[in-house]
Length: 111
Length: 112
Image (cartoon, rainbow over the protein chains, first blue to last red):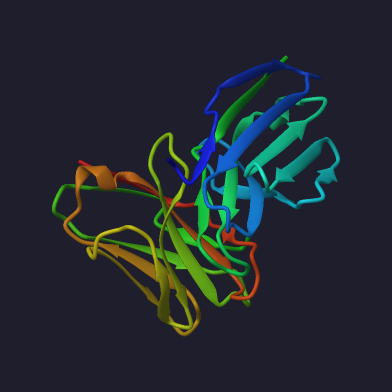
């Protein structure tokens, strides 16, 4: 079983739609969780960290369910500029340890 | 921009050759991590350097090696290149005690 699994998509949605991405991780000892965004042929960029209490940043909401080892990202009111690959990322320990990436979920927002 | 730079941006090599990729970390960052991203995959951890010492290594063979310099910049060396080494190579800089890693733009390597 892969350490971090995501639905690869692609997700093709119209502007204004709400879209949700899911991710599961295999190591129950994992400590930190993130969503990164990667545009085509560019480097990954941190979108948001994910906390057990859930967190929101504008149109983006991230949730963590430790019992189910499940992470989600919800994007409301999709914009064309949201088109990218969204990477689910897990850190096994606190602090600066290797990040473990999922394969990414591709989103295309269509006008 | 993250302030992390990498060179070169693109590189074409043939099987069996050796390659050196370079990374300059963000000002003040003392840790550099290297990742390999094959097409359609997420980045895979190669190794990390902290204070010029290797501080963790992923599942990559010894022909992948690295260095970190006193100014915290870093090199990734790959010997005896194979076709499967074709990928985007990313470096990420950070502070050792913090979780956020800042990625450079990457070097795209093609092995023919």
